[in-house]
Image 1 (cartoon, rainbow over the protein chains, first blue to last red):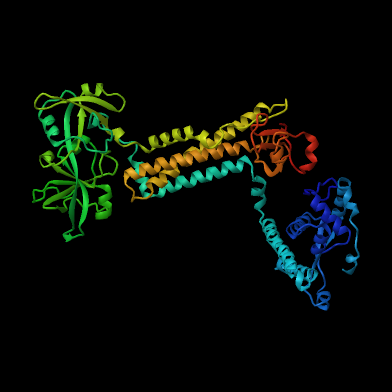
Image 2: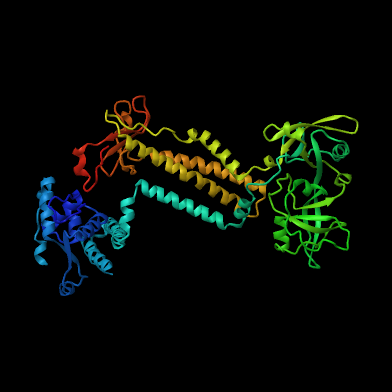
Length: 110
Length: 476
């Protein structure tokens, strides 16, 4: 896992790289990333906490008004930080298959 | 609360996503349940992230330092318990015992158990009146079960049956050991024989009363006067004795065999071989009785001698439960450096050095911590516990050493099954574990074969480094 998030040479595990790639592709919710990567919830959510602790991603709560309009509880969504984008670029060199993940339009709603 | 809020928000969408017609409801509930189970792992991760001190132990997991620290903590704990348990403290205070090395307990030549009395009263009386070559002082005692009516400060107490040793008046003079609570009312108006209590009876029946001396007790139709207290274990005499009744001629009314304690002359001491001596005693008709004298020091083994005996048994039994080999360390020409070898052996020695006192104190605490156990029971418990703890402790120690990387001494992790059992004779199959420092892989065969009988270490070169991000790689 990453030790120095600002260094482009930071080494990521394959799981963390998949999560960053999914976020970059527009899958910003935890459950969306689970569906996209096929990873279980016990892997995705702890990994996202560690990535947030390493300042590679940042979490935000969606507006309460949006949740109220749809009569559901509000969700937390995640976005890549600049350091996360740099790290993702470096990881794509090591895991070239990650670029085959297809981005969706889900991220446009937040 | 934020964590709960996040999971509730996601769970709503999970339920919406897996909402199915009735026929698929069970599968959708299974999916939702699987999603919810991930919450436990996430909570654990969150808890660890919130504890600033956790990374210290997280980084130390599997390291030799943590192993030594934990063993040291166990040692401190067992020693501390030994300091506070009253039974253990009392037993520790008895050793080393100050017993005259010339004192022996006499047994018949064919006797195999020094706990069984073998000397008849007539034999003793015959020896007593004759001058003996090897013995210059004798004392006799016989243990009988007597009904005792303890009279505590003039009040009638409950009846009890004690093991009372009817002993010669010179027994305690012969033993030369100090008694407790001997000051007090000694010039009683009643001319009653003296009774020496055992420490256990003194504490249980008289509440360790320091003024118990002079108290009268009724032993059946006989009255005795308490004259002192003998510390438990200090005398080392065989037999379960609650009190000693000192009489001028105990053999006169003895119905069965008893024990004889004798003091050896210089000639007798010279015949000593180890802890026993063959002596001849002469009776009234000049007949010679061949006897064996067993040193009092040997009648009751010390806790340390018991422990060493158990250690020896455990060492002999160790090959039966585990391989004593530390495994094959290298399959390539590169050998580990001498400092690494010294470090590895030093770690093994440190574990052994901590394990042995842990076993000693733990067995000691279990054997002597409870005051209900008799001395014989405590000895058996100490032997069994010392043997078991030492045997399995050493087995663990060797197994732990076999699974530590030869370079960094961290425990290998992430076991993975490799190969197929059906291809055992075509290719190896077994378990592969890795050192998370990126130094070595450990291959353990599932079935020992002639070409792969024990575990093997595979040293990794620098080309494997990218798999172990952030690890330090000392030179093997």
